[in-house]
Every structure is written in C-alpha cells, then in structure tokens.
Image (cartoon, rainbow, N blue to C red; front, side, top):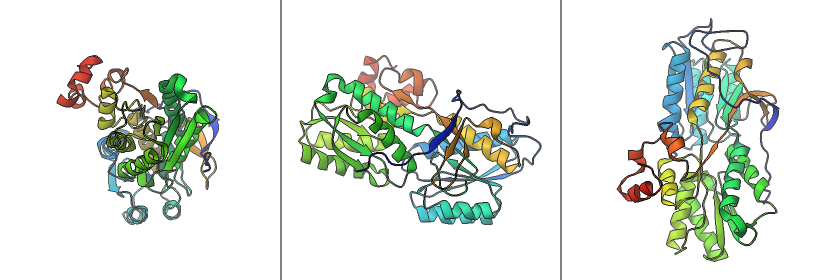
Length: 366
C-alpha cells in the first residue's frame, strides 16, 4: 500500500495559526469582511454528511452565526446536507446556482467528484470556499485544520502510549475514506512518525468513514494477527474508534490497547474519560467556521481576502489557494476539563452520565 499519498502543499506559512476576526462594519485594504459591499447576501452552505455529530451541532450553527455577524444580520445562509452522497451534493451545487447565491461554502463528500460542480459555480461567477476538505476545481479559498499535523498529533500520542512496547508489538492502522483528501493527510502525518518505529500489522482505508466498516476491518485484523498481538490501534476519528473498540471487546481483548481518535465527539470523550480510548484530537470548530464565513462574505462583496489568510496551498487541480489552517490539540483524560469543557463544547453533565460518573470523579471532572 502506498502510505504517502498526496497532500496539500504548503507554499507559504505564517507564524500565527489563529484566525483574526474583523469587527462588523470594518473594512481595509487587506480585505476584512463587512466592508462597503452589500450585506443582504445569500451564502450557500453544503455539508457532506450527518453521521458525524460535528456538522449539525457545531459547523452549521457556527457558520450561520458568523455570517450574521459579518453582514449585520442581513445575510442568509441557504443550507443543504449531502448525507454522504457525492452525486446529491453535485445536484445541490446546481440548485444553489439556480437560487443565485452570492457565494458557496462547500465541504465536499468527494473532493475529486465535486470539481465539475465547482467549475459550474465559477462559470456563474459564484466564488467557492472549500471548507474542511480541499475540494478540487477552481476554488477561491480554503479553510481547514492542519491535517498532516493532526495525523502527527495522533501518531505521537500513540507512540507515547506504547512507550517501550513501540518496537516490539504490532499496530493496526484504520485510516479514513479514500474519497476524503483529509484522510490522506492524516495518514501521511501518522506514517511520518510510525515508519521505522513500529510494525504495522494491518492497515485499512475505511469506506465512508463508517464505524461499522471499521468494526469489520478490526475483526479481520484480530483474526489475522491474533488478539494478543496488537499493541495499539491508530484510528483516524472517534466514530471509527467506537467500532474498533467494540470489535476488540467482542474478541475478548483485555486490557484494551491504546486507540486514537479525532473530533472530540461526546462518545469519544466519554471513552477517553473511561480509559477505553486513549486520545482524540480536539479541533476548535469556531475559528474554522469563522474563517469560512469571513472569507465567504468578503468574496461575495468583492473584497480582497489577503489579510485573512495564514497559508497558501495547492490542490491537485488549483495552485495558490488562499487558506486558513487551524491546529489540532491532543485530548486525553488529563485535559478534558481544560479543553472541551472550558470551551463549552460539552458540559460535565453531558460527559459524566451515570455510566461514566465514577471515571469522571477519578480524574476530578465534576
């Protein structure tokens, strides 16, 4: 298996990784949103699926809030979710064009398959902001997390958990979907730490990121390697980690090996608290959503976005895309309180249900 698939090439890196938000009504030569352009704009928002909790709970309301901020409450967000169907998302782009939206924010189901629809939007003079995944086609801007760094955060955490066992045991790698360019970058980042340090007994690209597919893959890995031969599991996200841990439990693996994750989903955080999942990557969705909204509003108003970005990246089809990349944070039981709780993502009451109350008390989460 080719373990170093293509990634967005960072051409220019700024030292600051935070998003600078413009105050409502401000505008300058660097292109802060909310300037002299019209504020009663339509922003088309296309998200890829609703199985992962983040999109409906965080991304959609955060983007809506920020669009309202940068348009003084006059902007409208027109929303559609593709439910993991690339063809449906292409049709949704065409529907947005027909509705004459002023700008599109697209989180692609399939980064390659969306390229033709992005071209149609461009032909209709509708700017496109690629959100969370680097869509192909003539996009105008991009915001996401530093995805290769996310893979490195996961890889480092797993190596730390393995300690002296890193060189002796085998790990299983459960990567995300091949249709998601982020998955390739997570995978590349993790491999940059694993290669030469651990033996990868089995590795899978998980169809559609589905937990049930990760569960089946993990069951196959256990059967092939032996339940006592797996030192750790790299899981690219929390949903798959849930399926992996279920497979390990079903096979009678005890104690559970360290398992990584990503997204700080509630179930994932609870497994971290309980010691079933070693870590997750906490990604602060607010700055990502704010960057998308601010760039989208500026583009719709014909403003420059030079002053909003911190990176320039290349996609397979477009060079020099103005971008904002946000870093991820390793979440373990030691920092649940100082990350997702303090940021208001999950409350102690949500995390520490009756099933997890004792584990919460043990780490001082109350």
